[in-house]
Image 1 (cartoon, protein in one colour):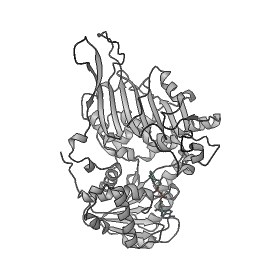
Image 2 (spheres, rainbow, N blue to C red):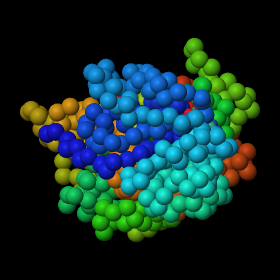
Image 3 (tube, rainbow, N blue to C red):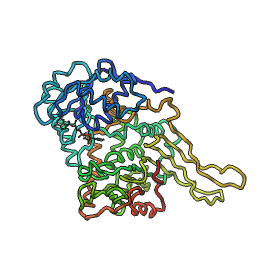
Length: 482
Ligand code: NAD
């Protein structure tokens, strides 16, 4: 099966921060892949806008180098020249006057205008204001806002208010790249395009849900920045929260941006406050050849968490009494992200089987090896009585497509959604605020108590107390493995 490519309308995409790390690693390589796939109409342009004084030729060479670094070799061919010819560059100062008149001069009538804010969050408001003051953004323009969207409710509200002064909510695309992942969307397809799962998707049949986002890397290189944030702000408030919403939400009446986002918002509003005993925070200690978090963070007194596990409860009919265990951390055993939905045991055991664990688990892998497995119980083959074993029913989509590289990466899919004007996979302002409203008291709680994160070994599964969080409830974490 070959994926269908539907070209989008002609667009001008301005990337503020077009020379930065995210633009080099994700945005520009992603656009190049969409170009190769034939999705980018011939007259479309990409305009890099950043602080450095570069000529157009110099910018194109920078982008050529980024693509050489971040697009697998097989994908690089003479087409790169065609792609580079679409690129322009404007040296601009987000907080000053330099470059804005030139950018305005580049804008064309009757094409989609999108402005990607791939700059430090402190500049989001400045850029929005200047786009509007200089008359560069028109009623059809879209802005794409990177994370982090605020660091608490007050700052998120302030940022929403600044953006709302210059743009309508329908023009604002708050990006959470987890929502662009193939399997995340597949989760919605599995839930809402099949009759099989939805009848079981509730407290009566689901024992608990685990969401894990584990990284092997530490915070070195960006330690000082990370130390002001921590795992709760950096990962849970946005990415893990979005995953939780997609699992827990009611079926929307239509796959339509506001219908989906209304349902997600209801989930966030129904989240219960989390008591201190349901929170475990950790900091990775030193390894054999590498220093620990405190050195990486350049802050020996830091109490910022590089790991967090939480037991989260949703206060509504569907999820009454079903815990959602969330965990995310750095310097863990493996780089692995997954959602596991564990169903309850059958109400009555008819087999005299000693193995104990007779549960169905739906595992949704986000990375690596995106895909889905449904663990089912079968009879262990062969003679010797009725012994049961758990086997995976593989629902991965990788086999259904000829070339896995043709599957768009999260960023490229989301950028194309921006050009199409489809906000379904982007966060609405009220959603982000509701997520902070739930997060703030949790953080304020541990700050007020003066809690210190528990040290864990690099390469482990996280702090001991996180194991206890599950054991206490008679459950266990799934192994973190690639
Ligand atoms: P970066 O520091 O590598 O790049 C910053 C870019 O902004 C550069 O192009 C620079 O020229 C430009 N810039 C800085 N000050 C400017 C000014 N006054 N006027 C105009 N341009 C200016 O940053 P990055 O890592 O690419 O991150 C960009 C955004 O994306 C941030 O909001 C970050 O939180 C977010 N983000 C980055 C990553 C990542 O992997 N790098 C991942 C998720 C989110």
